[in-house]
Length: 241
Ligand code: BTN
Image (cartoon, rainbow, N blue to C red; front, side, top):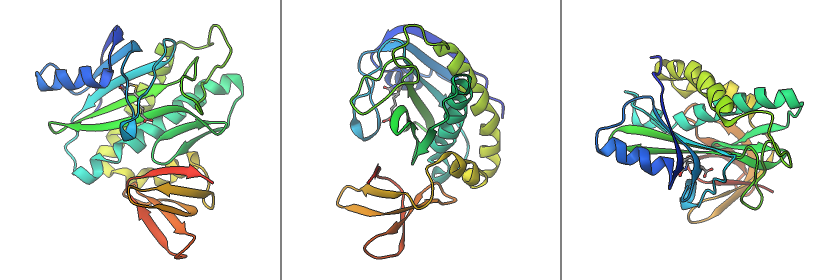
């Protein structure tokens, strides 16, 4: 299942996610269609949050149509997280920065602050993966970027995009065949460690405990402080405490 990438670059879009959705609805997109915007004016992230995409940062969305179960589909964002972490690591290695980790489900943290985010949406049986990487500026409080205070980052956004597509393209066929299960140990190598204190914010309550890794279906396991039992989290927001 090699992906045939078809990259369309625009100067300014409201949101690459919305442009791609509209193209899917009108039948103009196919597997591998990738919308890249140099600037976005109304980017959005998970939990309905705004995603500010200043120029200099990388913003793109692409479409895939894997013929797999719904449960498996939801794990594709974790695969994108692995590929993006590898891509960023390989680029930062040139700068000898290595403190880059995945925060479940797929935030990428650089020295404890978020530098990239991934959004997975389902539309008409297709998947849209949206990725934002802060390359040269951190537009939201508490976030960071790969190359702070450098007028000219040592990499272009195209180089990072290219690196990501190579990494993702290698993992995707394996994921189609085997699902997330075979990537559990890769994910854990890149993730923060078992035993880290976390708090998970759920719609109705918060759970505190120790991070216990990811399950074969991509959900997160937490050892609850109160019940002393392992609990599976399929959706929620994680904070370090
Ligand atoms: C998150 O961490 O909440 C996910 C952020 C995803 C942002 C990207 S930028 C490209 C694409 N277009 C959007 O409007 N959002 C995603």
